[in-house]
Length: 439
Image (cartoon, rainbow, N blue to C red; front, side, top):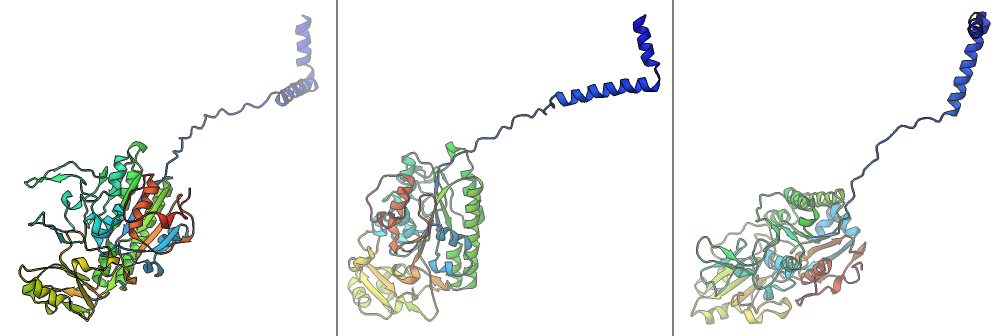
């Protein structure tokens, strides 16, 4: 057939004919290559997890016994960074410049004379066989004032306390007198820990960060965090000792871990760092023997140290008056009602009838006591050595501001502003901070 013949002719037409057909095929293939669009690779859509927009948390940090001039020892880069990018000020403790009275003042906004924790050790006529110590968690001692976390919890703000004096107490509750001393009623933070000095500062920070990693529904919005190693070192070695500087450096690093952990989880925070008091050096050459001021048969000492609180042995009041109220070197004594008004101290029933205050750096010891501490606090709250730390940093604070000195009764009103709690009548107010709070 002609078609077959034609194909045979093309096939048999020699090298020239075959090469021509190949050329035609190559041309056609080339044309297809330029006309057909490339096939795009199919990619799976990228699904990104939504980024949670976290509201700021408020964190109140106490570094017990931290003097503001510890920041000048070139070992506190993290605290200095917070101060330089936030607000700082010298802060005066309330009187007496002791740990428990001042921690309770910071969270209640009341002077010790009004909130009832008037000393680290005290007595109450309503509990004649019991004394208050720093281990006391019976609400009886604490019920005269309401701390921030109780008001916050009642307002629906979840709170958590990683140690703070009084944070383990069911405030408003009643403790049974018989074993097992069940406590009925009262309010605690939603999360709290029983104080244990063996839990390291690093562990405390990690616990706070773990709380803040929780789902929003069970995540605290107000947290307290307490550190004691700086105070411990100051007592044992003295405020100027290298061991105290080492403790300061360690706590600064722990504060850095807290700040970095917050940044890593994208958690904005208003951080308020305070101390309860400063620390003064003691010396074996600056000791006041109480039994050389008054006859030991005439008094009973409730507390000694930078100050002494005393009660007269019944029937010996006139003799004790004559001995205590005369002039003494490095010491001044008063009847309770005659304590100078500037201390805002002397009306509460738990304050004993007589009170003696030593000159800063001098220590009062009873005849039965031996003191080996190199530092202490409890002196005049306006003494420079008793000045406390204040640093505030976060979205609610201006940057790079230094405030005039203020007294720590003003901290609770500031915290109420940060938490959105209504103002509450007390001994302080938020006036020192109004110009540095970002509206």
